[in-house]
Image (cartoon, rainbow, N blue to C red; front, side):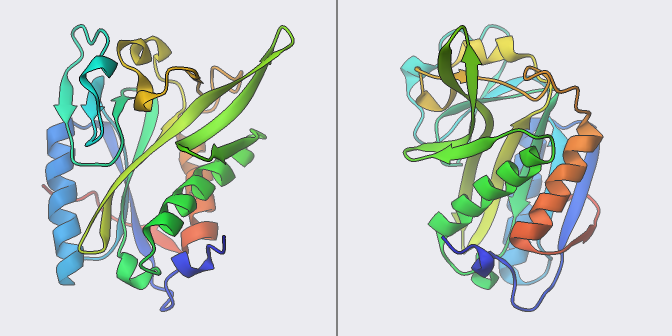
Length: 232
């Protein structure tokens, strides 16, 4: 699939913002909602917002009650993005993607493929062979142990489109507590596991992951420029 259409014809840069610390999920959603509305109205520019959350589970619009296994003390938030249950927490790079798809081809399927290509390209910087799978949104890696091959998920994708503006986005596992994924069936998929860059034996820092994400984003979606995080 040709992804060149995902680059703006006018060459305008998207903002690239990184928030320090951990951002509460309701605050992030409020900020995304406001920014996406402003983009649709033409009063704000596109924005990629990188952050970390405290430990939490989110339930997408397709989530099933039986997939919430044992949340314990980790809070659960219902959310309007596509997909099912997912986990966010420290050591995981969340990138919220607020792009104007009216300027990027008006093709949601192509957009999701672009998000997958973005993450796959970033992982290639660390010599990680990752890929997309038909019927399973996200980014996957093969693990070979004791002569067996299994597939683990290293990045999740869940987006919402309103008035042709995207929000929510991707989460890349850099060094999260993988045991926290045991409280849910991640994305409703029981037969596969979850991994991270550090779990793969790669001591990647968050700054290094961010640099790889930015370089790959430029190749798929076009230029970026430094910007402030959105206000709620």
